[in-house]
Amino acid sequence: MDKPEDSTISQVIVKGFLELDTLLRQTPTITNGEESSGTTVSSCLLSPTKFFFANCGDSRSLLCRSGSVAFSTRDHKPNLEDEKNRIEAAGIETFIRAVWKVLNVFNIQAAVS
Image (spheres, rainbow, N blue to C red):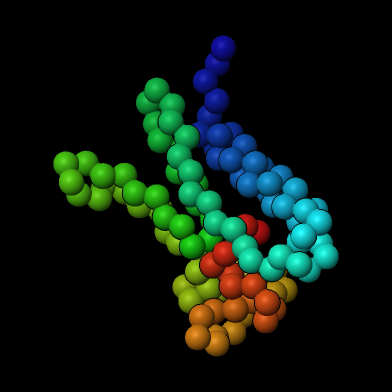
């Protein structure tokens, strides 16, 4: 069996995140408005030769060696200019009220999509 390319693995991880987001959006407590909190995820796929890190929202993964951080993922927070631009490019309004908010309901730090 051939080894998948790194880009293929990345695409599969993104697809998994999006499929989970779709399933969560269909959950009755979400669709009826009863539940308005969000979710975050931080994950790591280990292959025999590589680590594939993925995170979404206000979560972070760290890889430490000899007690020092060798790698860390970057939080997806709307106070970071590129994240704010990405969110607003999707047609979603952001604003500051103690913490960054999206659409006056969800704290963007706790959203999968």
